[in-house]
Each structure stands twice: as C-alpha cells, then as structure tokens.
Image 1 (cartoon, rainbow, N blue to C red):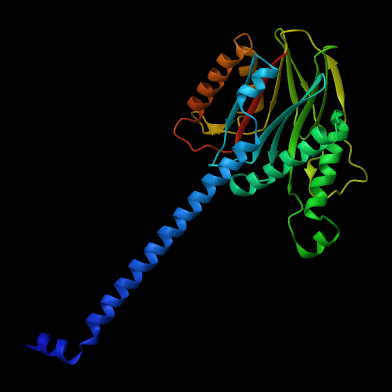
Image 2: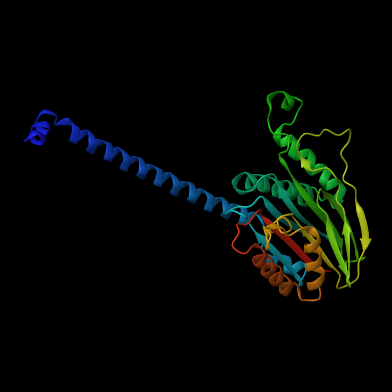
Length: 291
C-alpha cells in the first residue's frame, strides 16, 4: 500500500530514471560514432602514407635482390623509407621520426615530401648536402627560433635518418646519417658506418651542424642495411630485455648467405619468437639491398 502511495505522490521519479537511461544510451551512441570516425580517419591516413612510399616491387626493379621489412607499431608509422634513381645513381633512405602513430606519420609524410623536393626536383645526390637541406627545411617548417626556449614548446620535432647514394657504374657508395648508421656486409665481414651525432630538425643548439659524408667501394654481391632502432629495441626473451644492436648484427651476419627474401623471413621469425606475447615496442623498418 505504501509503495503504491509513493508512486502516486512521486510520479516524476520513474520518468527521471528513464530520462537518465536515454541520456546514457545517447552518449554511448555518440562515443561509438566518434570512435568509428576516428578509426576511419586513421585507416585513411594509412592509405595516404602507404601511397607516398613506393612498394617493395619498385625497389626490386632497382635491386633484384632486396627486401623491405616494414612493421608499424600502430596502424600508421613514424618510420619511413624512401628511394629514387637520379641518372646512374640510386639514393636510399630509412628514417625514424619523432613519435609513432599519427604524430609520427605526419612527420614521415613531411620527410617524404621534402626528400622528393631536394633529390628529385633539385637533382641533388650529395648525401651530406641532402641532409643539410632536409634539416634546414624541417626546422623552417616548424619555425624554430629562440622563442621556443621561452614558451616551453617541444624542441625535438624531427627525425633520425640514414641515407646512401649508390653509383652502380663505378661500384661506389656514399653515406651520411643523422644519428643512424649503415651496415655493409662483404663476405662474412660487417662494417658499420656511423652517422653524425645530430638529428634532422629540432632546435639547432650547435655552432654548426654538418653531416659527414663517408665513401667506400663495393663488390658485386655485397649487402647493405639501412634501418631504424625498433628491431633492436624490442623487449622480449626470457628476461624481457631489449634485443640489442649486437644481436641484430649477429642475425644479419648469420643470415647474410641467404637470398634477401629468405633473410627477411628469418628476421621476421626471430623477431616474433623474441617478442612472443609481448606488445611491439616501436615501429620497425629494415631495408636490405644486395649490390
């Protein structure tokens, strides 16, 4: 009797409860729509990023024995590769942009566009000059100035990159890097060419920023590797530690006698076994070329 009397005297309570449920359902639906739109935007961003990077089949036209191991941590990647032919020279790059996911992908699109300008449009093949121009253009794009010290904005937007120019006529190559090396394997000997200690972009705190050019000759069958740090930095194994650069070099040496595609499969297998059930730590990029 009392319950019935309360329902008569307080009729708005049920309406208020139903109104609250409707609001919750509406909010849930809106959030679901926003998530769908965000996912669709990310997928479209991947299409744009993939469209700006040439496919592995295009690399194989320049180097019949070659591979691209490209595994983003998220849908889109902060790592990117780039290559082009200018007359008798082939320029190849592998870069690791600040961040990963959508912020890194934006930076990678900028990097690809600037390399197209500097190398293809301006016809530059000097690797040291290319990196200097790239550094200048990236810093100009972000408008870096002394004001950055005052307003607390990020000083490190940019990328690490390895860049080589291969001359197939005189069997020589030149290399310059921004915090990234190049590995060269001839026979069973691995040579590491170190990059300069400056990144591309960010606030220039140095008196002068130069990217040293290193040159060498090669023999038919020698192999080159340009890469980012994602493979070596992957956590895994029994003790959940980083794979490390030394182990990465050992894997390259141990598998260097295989065809390039078989070597790619071995690198993927070893990575998957090391990672096991752990999440991928970073974007992964390895460019392998047989000269």
